Length: 580
View 1 (cartoon, rainbow, N blue to C red):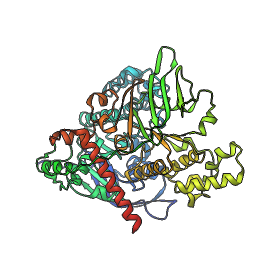
View 2: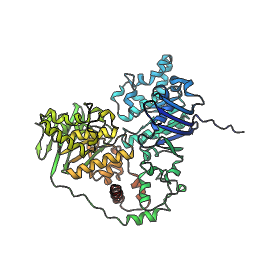
View 3: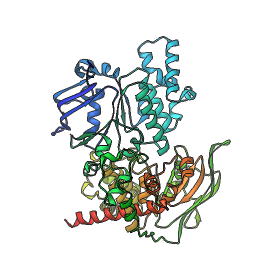
View 4: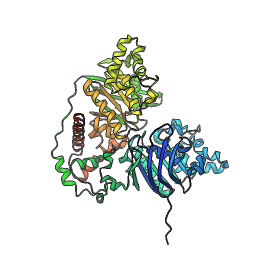
């Protein structure tokens, strides 16, 4: 008789309410995970998925206090009996912000930290560190400082740090948030390999559903408003409308097929575009594409920004940027893409004056801006960093947005009027007297944009504007940015890893790899070019694979058509909502 496996994680009628809140964050959760399973948890921001993760790794109830009803078990035991130390021996957590997990001065020290706490003898410690470093492919980095590493390398160090203790459960909190697409694929591949080789149970929380499905998962759990909305296989979930109803982005090829009027059947195995049976959908998709009418955005002929043969290095023998040469038209939305460490953020720092080039020039409206100070450039060029918490220096919203004007000696009456006008543009006027701490991450992002906009810049540079955002907040932020581009004529440069963002919102894409510019083309052409995508650690869009597999001759045109069609559908939906 075959013995039935007991669940390694089990929640029964489980409800949790933080002490500081009136309503429960999780309500009546019934959920099981069996040993060796790989489960993806998705849901909009604030849905409760992170709280569920905190219950699994012990932060609830040991760090985050609250009221619990119902019961849950980890490894068959009550977490209260295990304590947070006992749970840490069973559950290894890799955080979204890997920097927050580093303790050691070198990679080797960081990985060995848990073994030092367990008083493991040094020879065994060194061997175990070497073995786990080999598994995650960081054995050549053991003497490096974790702070010197790329985003993908840092994540591997964090993975090694939790794997070395032979935990039963690996918990990943948004493992792809700060990674370029190709590094993200490697991360998903590595997680899949470790799950199989170490026979561990893996739980992933991630917004980038399509990227996670690069490798198989056993189940996808959808959480909304603190409840489990769905717990099923990827094939079943992608054949339903649950993701869309919960504000979660579907894989682009699924959205394209639905736009074409196709009803997705789970029997066609839609989890992977490469192996999906497209025979039932091909004719309808091709007929939909034949209705295409691609309209190009009318841009000004005026060059607002020109980068001329720009080069820069921190060390003489190690160039970070070499011979960068491109221009940006007034009113354009330009994406700058490329792998981690390609020099994208360095380019932004050179434009803003934080760094000085070794050679080459930056021209604004035809004039070399080398003589201008950072403050003077800031009046024409706004920069919004990825993390709003790194930019905000005042406790109150009004004071934060007013700061730039006040340090420039603008009269207080004018400051007040300009701040109020800008807050209205950014949808923040009702919160003008609120503390910044009361805002969501997305609202804080708007505050940083407002602080730049109040100076009336002609150019706005956004570094990863949507990193870590769910689909609803991503759409809100990008539609807002699109509006200020179209209504106020502000030129936008976006530094991004997000291929969806680039396709949906950019007029043009400049691609960088190893400090050099390797492409300057439309997003569709960039993301349907195998060579460019490979060289810059980008990822070909699944729309390209869909077009090729359905024998559409011009995949780039198909991608352009889909983006415009999808945008038009969302515009109609927005108008409809406004009218109702």
